[in-house]
Structure formats: structure tokens, C-alpha cells
Length: 108
Image (cartoon, helix red, strand yellow):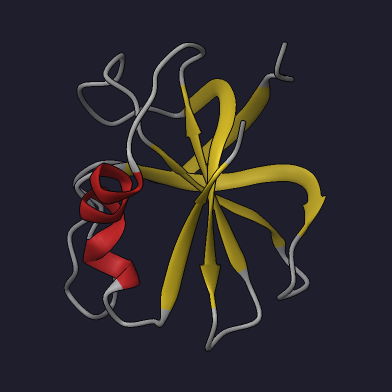
């Protein structure tokens, strides 16, 4: 059984960043896990159980977004039992990942 991970959402659905990009999914970080950039691990929340902005989410790691031209990776967290293809995940994170050279790796 996969370990549950709690994501603190700091960019909920509808959040608009400095460049004007509006977030279509919830995005946040995993406390106490330090990523390659020296900050807490960033995470996208992709789940059919979420229909709007949230403050936190507890789920499982289903994929890792590897940025080949950056020093950080992003985790994709979903509800236990949900499955997605790499193509589906790529479509959901494209709004930000389009600016990077990325690969998505599914986690068993």
C-alpha cells in the first residue's frame, strides 16, 4: 500500500501567477521534503475527487515530472486508486510544464 502524502495548497485552482498564467489544477508543496531547489517539494494535485480550489489534499504519489533543464522535479499526487496515463497527466500540467523540457514517469 502506498504512503499517504499531505499537500499544502498555495496555488489553488484559479490562482494567477506573475506571468498571468491561471492554474487549472491545485498546486502546492509537501512539508518537510526538500527538493532540488532547496525548497519544499512541489506537487500538482490531480484527482477526480477535487472540483475546485482546496487548502490541502491527502493522496498518493502517482507520477514524477522530471525537468531536464531545471534542478527540480514536481510530484503528481492523486486519490488512492485513481490512475492516469502519462498523456493525461501531461495535458493537465502543460499550463506550466510547456516552458520546460520535461518527462513524466509513472510511479507504481
